[in-house]
Length: 377
Ligand SMILES: *[C@@H]1O[C@H](CO)[C@@H](O)[C@H](O)[C@H]1NC(C)=O
Image (tube, rainbow, N blue to C red; front, side, top):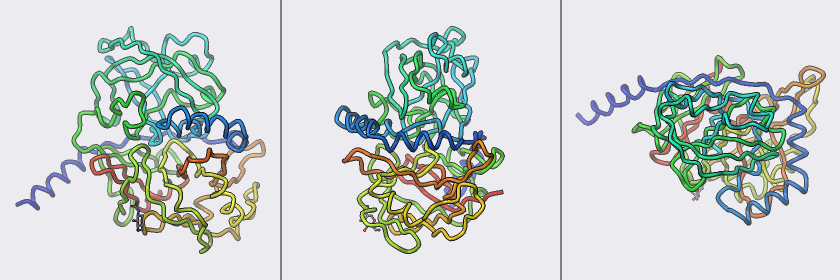
């Protein structure tokens, strides 16, 4: 009897799961290079040290830079619904969009912006916020309205209306905002995140990131078994801020990288590459060897294996060498990026490069992340 009920429950939840199409933008070599030199600068390190000292809860934000973020999805706010293309970001926990009362920042005019006067379900909050990200910052005030994402609704949900933007980052990105999908421990004032506030029982979602739009989805709630092969392997979240996993080793061409287990692996859909402390990444880059930027000869590079608990996830050169736009057409860059992280920032940020290969199920019900080989068209 129990079994029958369980099967039925799974069938029902499978049929309710919605596929949100993800739209991709091409990252340019210019953006990647700009990000690399920023992450390797001493300014960045100082900024990060300061952020760590000031507020331990938002320490990942200084390294976030949405210029290189590739995937965006639609969210609607208000009644009647106003539409925004936001980054579904498992590496942060607030929702914000541009505001119609943003007058002096060019980027506000280049995106969709929220008009509270046109929404019957708007409620004023008015409290101010400031968010610091990678090479810029955004400030504004909080508001409440009904938010719809993935066919799920959070009524009277608190979100940020951005009224001022500093830094080029936000102008270039083709995004109208960010939808944070990490834990409320790192949301501003620990407010519930969208998935905590939404009217659902199964607080879980999954990503299938493809190389083209038609092949890229966020599935919510739950998973779509047609999008991956084999069983999902689940790993406990070992720290409920980001989706942090127990990274026990990294092997490059069979050689274990010393000290890898001192870092937690953060699965971050809002970062394109795999970004880590130079002490960890530089030896990996050295083992990988120089990558031919013209993409002509990509042979001779080793596989890189990331181990969570005791499960191995292998990226071949084909997986971790990223093709980007450049002045000369296509360029090839390494999917691993080294940064001057502040001491005491023990994370490896594992972004889309990894998630394209491995279908990823983020489960807030039991605080786990599951991976399986993604099916690519
Ligand atoms: C991490 O994984 C290893 C290998 O499975 C295990 O021995 C260790 O206890 C795990 N650590 C945590 C914090 O879960």
